Image (cartoon, rainbow over all chains, first blue to last red; front, side, top):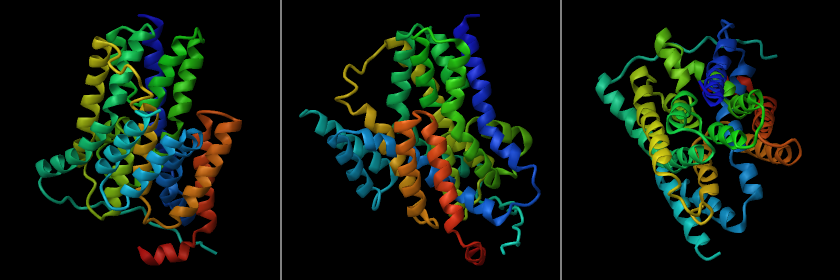
Length: 97
Length: 248
């Protein structure tokens, strides 16, 4: 088997460990302390934000405008509508660059 | 002092037939499938460009099932970088899943052992977000529902690597199609989905500022874990555990 094959297998094993690891560590405890509960409740906003912010900070004005537009749409509509509206906006703006 | 300790969440009761739960989950998975399609195709095409066979591209999508880490993997492969460093980079990009894993255990702790193994394998960003939202709405997070969400995403993700690998790069000008902005737009939607949670704005602001600073100083992909940690620390500092307990 090629080196690519083994890179993929090793990458897959480590990725699976990240996906089950947090649970394995936490399940060692019978009860969850309130502070830990608060921390876990913060995970969605805390992690997902880091996948947006640096991209926004390094985007051109067209990218920023599309992000802001999509953010507004998300206040009223579901996630798919928001995504398609944002995608349409960035594609439209980029046609004139 | 907040010495009160929570009991682990009780097992939610099943609601509706397995079939209706599967399709309910499937309905949540479809938009995710649509949003991830450009990246699945792009990955297959770029992988073959970078010297992968179509089989290897499909294997990588099937075994790792994490878009950003796969892109990093194939990019590094084209640059004569030692294998262990490529593997480590894949691990680093996926490290954020440790946090999802810890948090989602409260929602899917009642799954049977084999169901759990499969569910953790399928734990992507959108899968995690949907599971949290489902639990938040008070409806039962069943294995069948979870599988319903994951099925369209996984099947299409693997298929797209194959199609992209076979037909090569159909996307001639990624910049004009805004490919670089599609993921941020998508993830912004996920972030907005949690805006009703306690201290959401404080967490988002802290994570945003620290992840941007970390991105510009330490660099990718560590800005994700560092920024996330900042948001979590802020949540713990500003939280009032007594109030949170009353609301339950």
